[in-house]
Amino acid sequence: ALERKTVPLKYFKDTDSWYPMWKLKSEFGIHPQTAMKYVRQGKLKVYVIPGENGSPTCYVFPKKENQNILKSLCKSSNV
Image (tube, rainbow, N blue to C red; front, side):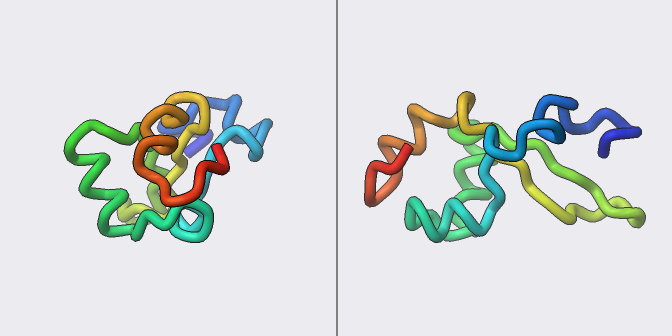
């Protein structure tokens, strides 16, 4: 992803600036399928890190870009 520039460099340098998919479930109660629905609807911003075969291996949800929507969607306000 770094070589292909599919994810901005700042997210590699600062891992606290984004949420992985599993953290949306554990901290905000947002199931992965629901998170992907919000991505399709344009409510959540995500960067996809593809594997060698091109299929997604990791989803990077930037904290700053998703802060307001996560506050309104989450069950507990930890943002």
